[in-house]
Image 1 (cartoon, helix red, strand yellow):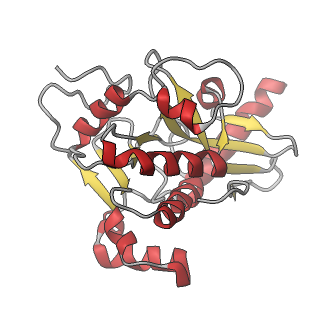
Image 2: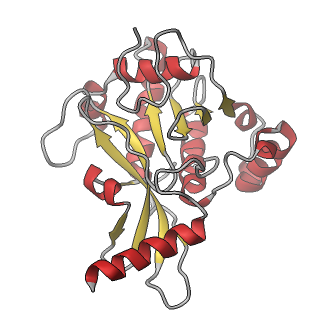
Length: 261
């Protein structure tokens, strides 16, 4: 009976979201300060309360980026000296704004929170060189253990050459992606754009709609999100990639991110 109820919950979530669990459609564009991450109620009448919830998931070199509830995102840093301060500010905002989840929870795709709500997890992957000991870690520890070579491989797949950091939300085959580029952004802009990533990642499902990549439509959507805090620079920070110009030797769809040959 318990297994049957879990199946019903999964079917209810997928029916509402219009997603495939390992699927081709991804949540859309993406939002920084400490507060609970927003979740969208995707409950069917008579079913348990289900919310789409963005989570940050640590993985090491031995673990692939598993899609869940439609796809996955990854946070890409560079080790360029000029990016060091932005890297740290981005780290602080991500871990203040987003709840963590384990790879096992992401594999299942659903978890039950303390208040009884069932969460449909949308993962943002944090790349570690090696698995860190259990417990909380500060951003100095996290950045010291960050897997910059693996991040470089993913950047090479998508032709991302600036200092970053980047949020990349990709379909499982990596043929399409949405990107937020934090290169050159101020501390305040980074906080706002991390919040924009989080809030959009929590519930929007039409990231692959070609109309969203058109500049006028994108500007209107971003302006609506930020209201009086809108800056024109936010529009240029958000973009999309289709049929990426992959560096020779890189393999799209390899979510274990084997080094490019």
